[in-house]
Length: 228
Image (tube, rainbow, N blue to C red; front, side, top):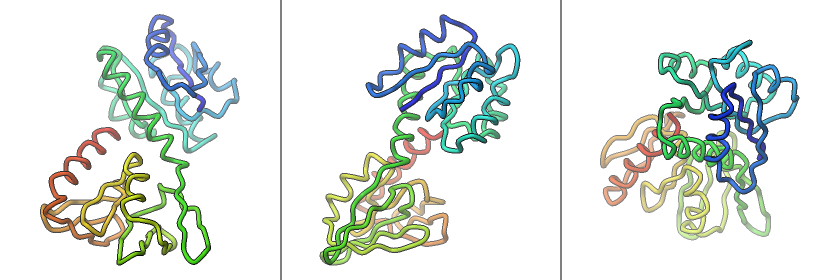
C-alpha cells in the first residue's frame, strides 16, 4: 500500500507520519504539490494539505484522480470553510489540523480500511465450480436452505458456502446481517424503514428483521460516519 503525505509544514508531516500505524504502508513525503505530481507514483491514499504555495490541494487532487480514480484523498487543512468544496473532488475525508491525534489517526485508519475493501474477493463454490466475486460489487446475499445467492450489479452467483462463514468474511468490509436470510452491502443502502425493510439504491427492498433492527441501524450509522 502506497501512502503519500503532502504538506509544507515539516512538523505536521512528522505528526501524520507518526499516526500511520499500518505495517504494510510504504510512505512517501512531499513538501509541495508539484513534487507529489512529479513523482509519477500511483498512490492508494494521499494525505493532502489544501493550502500550500503553488497549486492548491484541490488542483493537485483533481490531477491525482485523473491518473487513478481509486486513489483516496484525505484533505487536511487549518480552516473548515474548505470542507464543502473538498467533497467536489471526491475527498474520502476532510480533517482539520486542530483535531486531536486520536481523531486524525482514526480517519487515516478508516481510509486504509476502505482501500483494503476495494480488492477483497470471496470464493463461491457450486457444483465443483469456483467463482471469485469482488466484495464491492456485491449488493446483497440471500440464503435459502443450504445454498446462498450473491447478487451483484451485473450477475447472480449461487453457491454452497455457509451463510455464517460468508458473513464473517464480509463483515469487516461494510456488510451487515439485517435478517436471518439476508446480508447487505451498506454501500448500497438508500433508506431504512425501522422494523420493516431496507431500500437499496437499485430499488430492491430487503426485509429487516426485528431481531436485527437495532444492530443494523447502529452499524449503518457508524459506516456512514466513517465515510463522511
